[in-house]
Length: 224
View 1: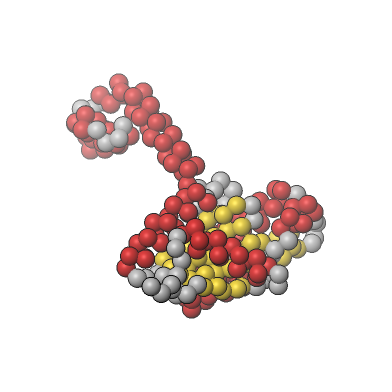
View 2: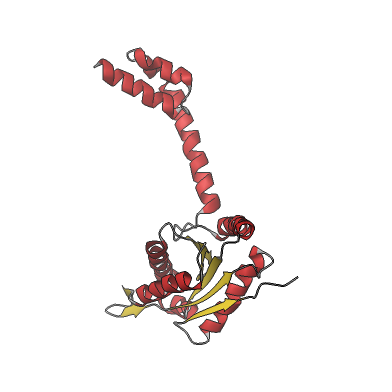
């Protein structure tokens, strides 16, 4: 019983941010009961901070990073890779005909499509890239250290995976999903992270003219 009492005391101490006072109570049977309200208050405050932090960086619908967080991360990665001379690839993705889909099936169905696309992005990029919902039906990927070949291989795997989505909306009807994607790779030709992602967005719109397509753009390194 004594080890159980000690364990409870340690846990309670950790709940109030791991204070030494909480840990010192571990050897006193049941003394922790007197400060459960304080521990609960500390835990509630900690959970509140976690929620606020999550809201500042995570898109609620898809669980991916949001635009604000990804742009901060992209700026940091851009500067670091520029300093060490490594390539950096960025992709912007748009779900084809998404507005028409929303008009026909409703926003709840649209959210389900967004979640499914987000899930497949995570599955394919893993820890090799950052995935975010860029806004509306657009997503973005940042591939630190990736060259054109690596980024294109991953993009093609994502495109094929999303082609396989079948969602039962409108009764027995199964709805398929396709995407258009623009990829740009920086080898030193872009002046800023903003220019890089803006070019990826432009390349995506070129791909969108074809639908279910991937286009790749680049900018030559400036001389002098």
